[in-house]
Length: 341
Ligand code: FAD
Image 1 (cartoon, rainbow, N blue to C red):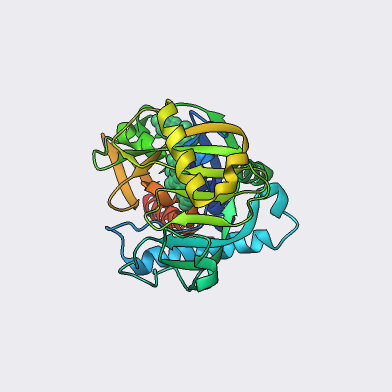
Image 2: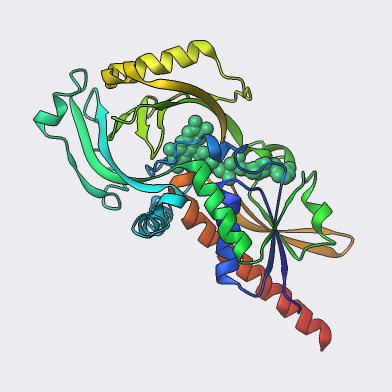
């Protein structure tokens, strides 16, 4: 069989990392990324890019932990390299604070991040409304630079990228041997997945260079995540809202909530507002499917539905998707050699 042609649909963090992982694990493949939007116009561009996992109720914890571990190790290596600044990857230390002691004092990812420990009394004095807290160091991706860095690495391998809206995965069957579906919330329409729903998130990006530590309220709704150039203030989680328009009342509310955690933010300047739709699902859809019409078959690998935690697990899920692409190639090679006999 000639070099297998693989189309990856979607150019958010999941599509780009999956395409790169396929190129790295199968250098003989010809990989093309097709997407109706590229950075800076994807949901992934809006994200804060913090490596703090979200829990998927339908995915076994040991699998989620493996995805997170692989992602953490991948980005940690970038943060320790000369690429760190261009890729927008850096370590960040801070606190997760709770008004009441949480049921689970040791989250499943506590031994993957660095230096996880309960906060001291002295640290807790900074947060008079909170009674318990956890301190740790994790990684953060500044999302638009990271997406551009992934695109640059992909182009350097010879991968192609085209702007194209795919109306039906089957339309790709005559041009590609394998299709990988990384369309985020777009999969709701593209493959009619009614289990995939948007959870709208509004965030502010501000100039506040004195804020160096992250602060996250344990409920995950209010957070302050400092990046290399801007600080992300969040947020909201609005289930089944498809609106991409910023809401001014919500902007004010987010700002007030963040100032109550970090009063110095009253001096923040140059506030911009962003909205994104998290592709939320009971579990990430990471599986093979074979589409078939009139005896013609098209192997598909789905990799979407990462909800609130796409950055935290992207490299782990990309590795698994690339492994599934490898299985599709083996099956295609098996059927083409049987046909020759
Ligand atoms: P997307 O980035 O939406 O990419 C989907 C791609 O598919 C796009 O390029 C789109 O144009 C393309 N596409 C869709 N349909 C079609 C079609 N029919 N034809 C062609 N192309 C198509 N996660 C974390 O881990 N840490 C965080 O701190 C964090 N913060 C967040 C804050 C906010 C406010 C939001 C909204 C999300 C946050 N997330 C965070 C979650 C994270 O952003 C998502 O899990 C992740 O971006 C999903 O990536 P994706 O590539 O699947 O989707």
